[in-house]
Image 1 (cartoon, rainbow, N blue to C red):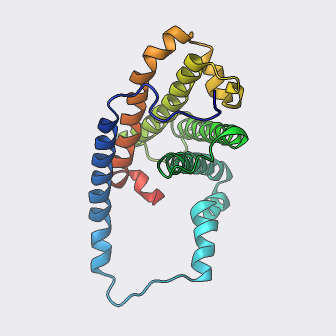
Image 2: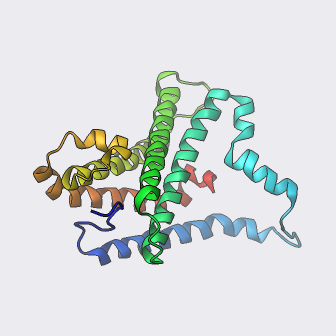
Image 3: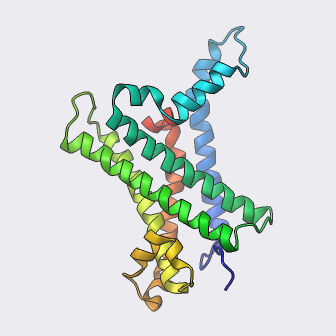
Length: 230
């Protein structure tokens, strides 16, 4: 068995996924336009461009959350875990897509093993950040944090999407029993819950659940508090 991840393993019909993805991206695009349109009306003669200070701020404030760390270290770490975990998983999906659709075939052998391990770490970071966010909001009850229904929805939705990702990985590992499964250490641990004959028929159902959760989240971003990520 070649070291790698079979795309759309046990999934039929594949065209249904592409249709759902197109709908999700379409809704995302409409939402993005609705949010940005009011800004464009007031731009006037303003011209934007690349500037060293702006690029520096992108990395220090946007990606590393410098201002959040300065005001509240626990909040800074929580945001970093969620943002970095989500970003790494997103980049991992882009890499997997490029490898498959562009026929690059570089996600094999040792490269694939390290790729798998890095995504495991990213998933753990995301789940740890979400749990920490829930603790701060609902157990510690940090005074400056609002408690709206949307706050709980976003945390639950992100957490369910991340957990379902680990679950379908676990089902795939349980069904295929690859020799390198320990590199996907969380998925391997969860796979011990299932035997191969049980995992194979369950896999497609949970794969579609993960797809609905993830694509729905993409469509929801412009209409939610998650828009601040952009």
